[in-house]
Image 1 (cartoon, rainbow, N blue to C red):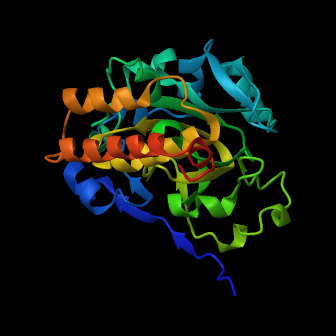
Image 2: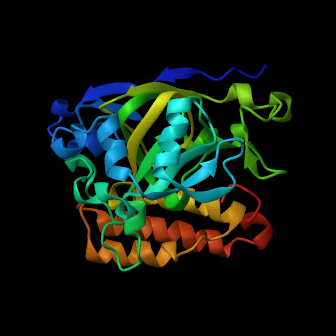
Length: 308
């Protein structure tokens, strides 16, 4: 008999617990999702913004938004339109990955110190746009299960609102992903009977509110429900701490939808040379590149069959 999946609560820490120590964070906690309170203590300009101040700051900005019904159609929408929707409880748009560089907030915000070792920052591959994005969601917005591209580690910090995250480790992905249609289960659109292994998947779940930061490791699938109108900043990280996991996730993504818009393999090799952080960066990077070489050596039917 198949065993039902287990639900796990996301661990909650306070930033003071590790004083922004990067090595401590990656050694002790970055292998699982974690909620961190007090992460914006060194960002007082951002932490002090209330909803009215954010509306004023973003007034006139065009933000890239997805249609709430499907999250497949995107267009630029005025920030004041989005905030008017929030006030009127109209769930038309969901801003989830608009680069903070295209907003006035870029001059005030920097990620917490324990997340700043990031090969996307200042790389020769034009990846600064991945570093931090604004998120603006109407109450009841929903982001279905997905994996962030390029093997990213991810995080989100809320300035106001409340969201519930459900996250799946990479080994759980086959249970929530349909290989025939090549898509994840969509909780609001799909019949669960179409995903017969769904109930066997283990998952981690947690809620974040104003001032909370949620972090998840490379390759973790996740879905997000917005319980209250919310605004926050999220980011993406690739670095040598998890480069093997990032490469494994990217190869799975490549097997499903192609390589994406930039040469991830060259990016990894370049940044390992330019910006190593861990003592065994060279060994980790070599292991990651070996995964890619072994994947390329597989017959095409195996490479594009799913597991990567």
